[in-house]
Image (cartoon, rainbow, N blue to C red; front, side, top):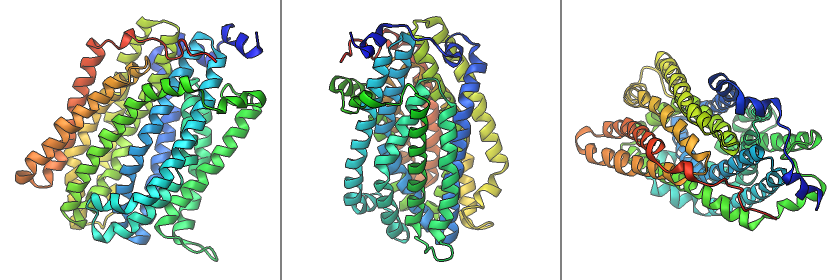
Length: 473
């Protein structure tokens, strides 16, 4: 028996962090585990806001529309990577709970090589088809040239960015939230420095315009990725492959198939959700460049409101997966309840803060006292409060995904977006005009929360087998 094969059958001595996830008090542990990710997400949003601020101030409000439209495409593609990363994180968490180190190494190698290969394909396809895609979204003529330039450069960043993202998700699958936070600080700090330099230039460094926003992010995450890999190797992390372990970078096809099957629903979910946003953006763009700019400004604030639900959900997936691997089902039920309470509470606080500071925040992106600001304020009055329900949807979907139930959340979001949100906007637009688009957002968030609760309560997700069951070398 090889050392690695024997390691699969020996129990793993759990760290204090892993013991806390399995045995500690749920709400405090969940909040403590979520805080680094929440702080990371906050800093990510601030870097996005920082880039948007420089784009709008240096290149104009219509350039901001180009960034907003490209962001929807980026999130659509990211769905596949998030599906892969979620599957990998669940497999790692379950393997830790079951004491299977060999399984962890196999997951890491296969995930990294798959993410990089997918990024290369998307870089090529994105560069070729960007003009057709943006024209199909009815992007206003004032924003089209900037949109093509920006999206093409964003596509070129995908191979390394996808590897960076799945590395972070796999680290969280081990119960480690601090290491991703630290290296995200590196990425964020460099982005804050590089963005103004590359957009506007300084001294002998020429400004690159809107392409500089993408190149700044590329440079920053590339440096952070290299630094993180070197640090993990030095610390002999569970997800750092060394020497003979590098053979796991050759994809293990049974595992690729299993992770693809488990991750495909989440990728499909992203396509369905962001595809619906594509349709809605097309409707927004039809109402003119000023309405599109107002929408883009309002949407800049929504990420801050959604952040707590996202951070809590990611933490719940890691915690629930480890408890499922250890067969602690009563504790999994308590994680679901406490997670919903924490997610809704934090999202409500974020919503209130944005409403209180709305004029100041919107004024960063559109002229103060003008029609664009009034329109952006009207959009937020209708849309913003509805995101509170996301705390329920995200939390319950996180728990069922921790037992590899990926398809049900996808179907929930498919129904939400294509039966409630898009038809609501299309049906009401002749009477409410652009306001119909804004009202479709709370219609979607409220319906998704109800559907998520129904599946969590009555679905058969508890009957799934562990992801790494029967996967061998």
